[in-house]
Length: 257
Image (cartoon, rainbow, N blue to C red; front, side):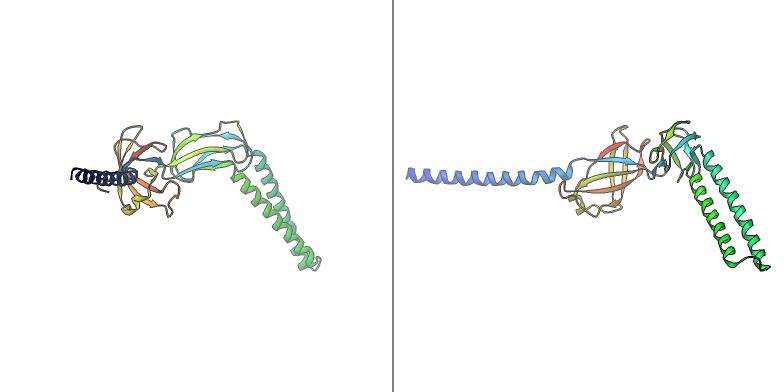
């Protein structure tokens, strides 16, 4: 009887240990998902609008009327190239256009007197059109000598100095808009179970420790298969203290999510 009792006790203990092991395994498997959902998410503050004005043609900087941090308005010239040579070519093209126009009008009068053939009049008209096209080309090139702010904002960076030669594609001025800053982040895909546009997240900025409220305005239509995350964009609806583009911070999922 004692041996039978001992075997039953061993079996019971073995069954209990197996159950405890299975429970621990299930807990371990569910822990990463829960931890990923509650872990803080990093965000980066970006400007509502930003633009890098770059050179479309080679040139030499003749004027930079703005400096770092200056306010600019839409349409304001923030830098310009020395375009004296281009302007001279445009003036020459205008003179050629005027000469072609006078010649065309003379041919028309001669045609009325039956002293000029129709083909001569057509050639004179073609020369007028050609001269007009040259003027438009030079107008476009002269316009590229001026760098105009596309929106109202502030100067974030000045890449050039007066007298500096600039190659095509080189950055000249960086601008940021005056609108409310935004923040982008990659959140766990599990958040999609409750995250919707209009949802407000609470976060904290690393540089200043300021608490911010972030309103979700865009959610990516694709989940990254590797990181199991989705990119979202938020707008800062409130903040304690100044928040500038380039700052970073973190948010957590609301309690109970």
